[in-house]
Structures are given as structure tokens and as C-alpha cells.
Image 1 (cartoon, rainbow, N blue to C red):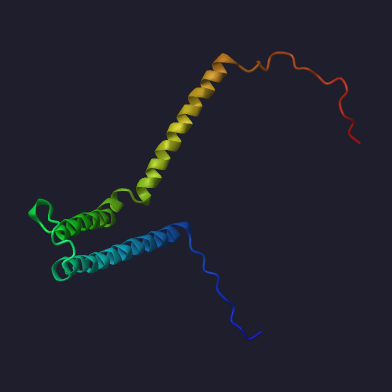
Image 2 (image 1 turned 90 degrees about the vertical axis):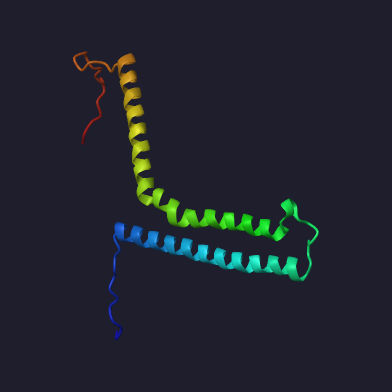
Amino acid sequence: MFSKKQESTKIDREQRELIEHAQFRIKQKKNLFRHFIVFLAGAVLLIILNKFLDFGTNFRPGQVDWFVWAVLLWFFLFLIHFLNVFLFSGFMNKKWEHEQLDKLVAKQKEKIAKLQNKVDQEHPLPNSSEPKAINPNPPLNP
């Protein structure tokens, strides 16, 4: 009775797609930032394990401490994640997906049209000039 009428706000399809894309990008960047924090903490932990706690001090592949290889490998994975978020997502975004979908639909329609032409040529429909069969007992209309 005393409550205000709630306005129904409708978001059109384009606005919804923009919002969903923005939310997706925010999630990507948030996950990248988390990955970076975990990478830094993990690298510090590996250095502390090797240098201060003498964990794996005898294991030195290539005359380099093992933690250097571990941090380099992890950095490479982080770099791939970074490139995926900031470089490759621009190449294969929603617009690209829609273009690819349109191309595939057009190809399918073309194939269907070719098949339909082939069927029409091999099995033509009877001409309308041919006599039609007439039902000798048509239904009665009351």
C-alpha cells in the first residue's frame, strides 16, 4: 500500500553482452593478479627452502640451483597466462566467435542448398499439369 512501485528495467541484448564481457574480463584480470601473488609468494618460499633451510642444496642441474629452474618454469606459465589475458583474448573475443558462427552457418546453408538441388534433379516433383487424384468420398460439411 505504501510501497513504491518498482521500475522494471529491461536490459537489451547488446547491453547484457557488454556487461557479461566486462564481468568476464574482470574475472580474467582478477585471476591473473591472484596468479601473480601466488607466483611471488611461491618463488620466495622456494628461495627460502633452498638457501636458508638447505632443502635440495645438492641438486643443481646445469650448475644452477634447482629453485631457479622451478621459478623460471613457473614464470613461463605465468607469462602464458598474462599473454592469454591481455593479448590473445582480443583476437578470439565474442565478435570473432559470432563471425565464425556466421561463416559456419553460411557453409551449412550452402551445403543444404546443393543437396536440395541434387534431390530436385534426381527426384523431381510431379508437374501440376498432371491429373490429380480426387477423393470420391469428400467429408460432409455441416
